[in-house]
Structures are given as C-alpha cells and as structure tokens.
Amino acid sequence: MLKFVVAGPVNAGKTTFIQSLSETPVIMTDEPATDGKPGEMTTVAMDFGTFHAGEVIMHLFGAPGHQRFDYMWEVLCEGATGLVLVVSGSEPRSLPFAKFILDYITSRVPVPFVVALTHVDSERSWQVEDVANYFDLDPWRVVQTDARDGEQNVEVLIRLLVLVLEQRSLGTV
Image 1 (cartoon, rainbow, N blue to C red):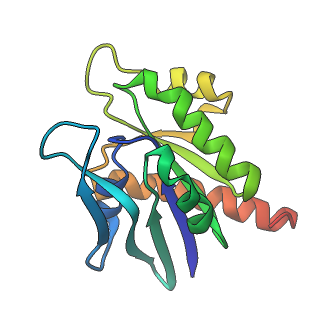
Image 2: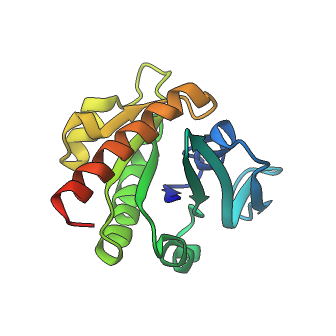
C-alpha cells in the first residue's frame, strides 16, 4: 500500500483530482466556503480515495487548501510515500502559497513530490516551464493535467512512483 497526499491552494483541483482516480466512493469533508463565492464548497479536513495499479493499492489523501487547516497537512503526511502538489496555472498569485505548502510539508516529512499543473486552458495561464522555473524544478516534475481526467492524472501518479522508486533504490526512504 502506498500513501499519497494531494495538497495545494484552494480551487487548484485537489478534490477533483482524487475523484477522477478513485475506484471507491470518495470520502469528502466539504463544507460551504466562508471566504469564497456563495455556494462554493471547500475541504475542511480531508478527502480520501483509492486507486489500484495491479497489486499496488494507492491511498489518496486530499489536504485542505486553507492555511487555517495547516495542522491537517502534517497529520495527513504522517507515513506518506509521496506528495502531489496541485497548482492552478490560471491563478499565478496562488503560487507563493503553493510554495509555502510545499516547503511546510517537505520540511516536516521529506517525501518525493511532483507538481500537477491544472487550469492551463487560457492564453495567460502559466505553463509547465513557468511553474518549473518558479519552483526551481526539473520540468519533468511538473505535469500538466486536467484534474477531471483520470487518464491524465494517472501520468501524475506514474511520475511520482518513479521518484518514489528512485529514492527507495538509493536507500533514502
């Protein structure tokens, strides 16, 4: 069993990412957002879904995107195998907060991670190279995806699995 945490800013597509992949009903803790648009929902504790790749079962834990729930980031990352940081290309002003989330989690739980880049359908959206440069990452670690498309999201998990296996072969996990 592998435990992957899916984290990122509000409205980046974390819950949708998990819903598109999960082969079991997703457990969600969504409540009406108090600081968003009327009718908008937000995760207040976690989302949970599962994905099977042959014999391997992946547990997907979605973390809340608000800083006021940062205590959940640490709780959810305990024992994690890897991290998917979901960021929206159409919300570049959320990238500093995404970097804060990444630094917060990886400084406490040093896990391999990839960045899933969503919402890149407008002309002014940030693209893979932009995000890789912002995070100072090899562009291979940033995967453009549509959070609604499970097949695209499998590519995100494959890249994360490659990093996990590399770390294990080096004996660092």
